[in-house]
Length: 158
Image (cartoon, rainbow, N blue to C red; front, side):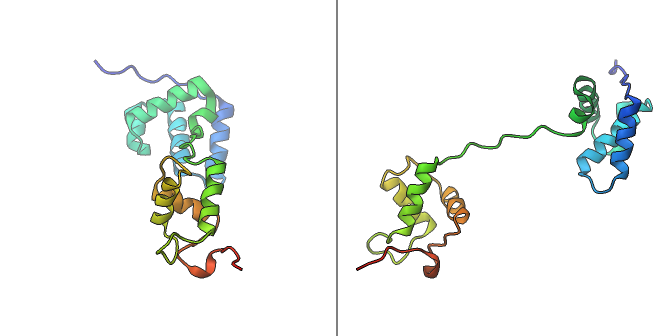
């Protein structure tokens, strides 16, 4: 016993929009594949037939049909934005770490390294814990290179 065949009616307006999208030039590959699959669905092809023509899986074609039925053309062709990971450091923590990097390095060190900044930030209780990559990205965003002496802003002495 197989799955029931897809019975999708793609509106003529949507078909025209898809054809314009396909002939308009550079598009994301995902969007083009989904658009082609929708056109084939409108012609009455089954999910396995479409998957062999468009190089999508049967399940992807079925999901595409379901998204079109529930949300329309935009929902079928394009993905929702993903939120991404939350920032590890808040603004005040970032400012304190940048201020620490702009000061002199600890006793016995000639300059700051990314590892040293991460260790000192935890040691000075600026942050509860922080990784080297987070520090590296923070320094990169502020265009600081503490391991290169000429790129660091130092306090004036004297």
